[in-house]
Length: 435
Image (tube, rainbow, N blue to C red):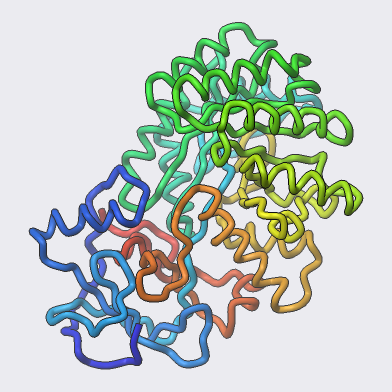
């Protein structure tokens, strides 16, 4: 990063080209591929007049082989004029269901539903009613997420006899098509239950054995499956046999949820799966007395268990700051997007950080910035990705917006002018760039 200069050679379109697909998620692997494809020659771009994190004075952000450089730009580097725009790290969606989406489809009329069983029945109806193939719908939504500034996501995909592994295959195809712009983890998610729905156990096993998924999931072992030990033994057994992670939906509240959560902690430690287990939603945690919360947070941190929230309301959002004080990683997700569960959702993680700030009644600048950091840094740590700080050595993964400062961006949600992945523009003005 340097003060503005004219050392680099200007080009008419600095970022029309997008890197070829790379299967690995790490910045280091992406950089290695870029060098190989360039015949060992560095690929360099100067993003001129950028204000990282809303800094008062603009600088030139020099990117070489996908990483921010602290050295002068090489001869022949491309130039992108950012005209004083704010550069912010691209964001991470730690919990999304792209297989269920009707995003971009004709309007769906939803029937009443109240229980988990009723909602899952509605999922099946919508799945059969939508005419666009699942892989196209998933790719459309995931591409939209990229254009709004998402760099990575953890995708929960329904696995049940009603769907077989169609969702895993479809989201896997979308992941492959977008791997130039997006890192994706896939969770085989038993939305219909593990034990209560015969045949699901075998599908979870097949998904994990095939290598098509990164994690296996579970759902409300007591409240929905009514089989705490049996469900968790199945899920953790599959994870242990096939070397995949775990991400369990836990909507259970109060003592029921805490019982399930402590059973998850026990199995995580018993199988030495520290760092490979996430619990999503975790509605039993908000509202705990401070002493009980601190004790539970210490147990979660010791077991290396991370949590995710989708900030649904002030009484159900996780106490992110307190959990982080104890070393518990917490990510933010967008959950369902225009599916049978809800007509709402947009896969825009900047908007989700706005919602997080809203439900937490953020008022101070540091509170607004913390909501953004939960989405950017918290999500990156949860998915094992490098945190983007836009300093030398940082992945050149950022979005460009107009505004005064980061807190104002969280409130006003300006248009994403550019989205940059590994130093190359992958979206302009909210639309995917050419690939």
